[in-house]
Length: 239
Ligand code: FE
Image 1 (tube, rainbow, N blue to C red):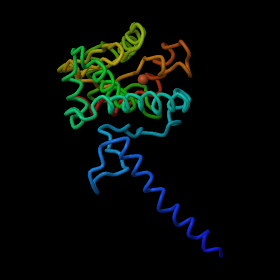
Image 2: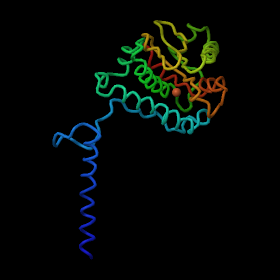
Image 3: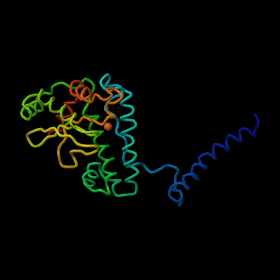
């Protein structure tokens, strides 16, 4: 064996990590000693794991939609939020606190929007499950019948509210004491910003359904109600 070859590989193996440290020291915090590292600080927020596989909601929501909606859109909200809160006290706060604290503050609109979209999407993934939809049972059904007259009337109102949201937004089932209400919110707005208690949500931004349903929001919301809604999760949110 040529000893020079062995020496060359060995040298490269040592140089590569050293070069990484030099680059990191230039790009980030000043290198002040052994603590300076090529490893970036942990992000305050991370994309939560989906409660099911990306193709689990097919044929009602395709794996392609999920790969964009969860992997690109939701990830982008998390990444933007991390940039906005970096080196601020908000980096160690909960999403809920950030949302409430930033509500209605014009200079915190970007933080609010990205924090709320992170929260809303996480809640939306939990609001669905493979083999979901249809009529709930127990206390949830009792409250729906008491609040809307019947389960069919609830579905009609939920769908009509989803269609009535002009542009991007969300439709929500919320609890108000012993009764339930259906509300819509625009863009990133969220019930928790106003102290309401959400039980279930459907994302009606076009990115939620355009690849599978194009402009047919009504068909998407109907599929949500008939095949996806996770009533076990909704019931777990009841107070
Ligand atoms: Fe979305």
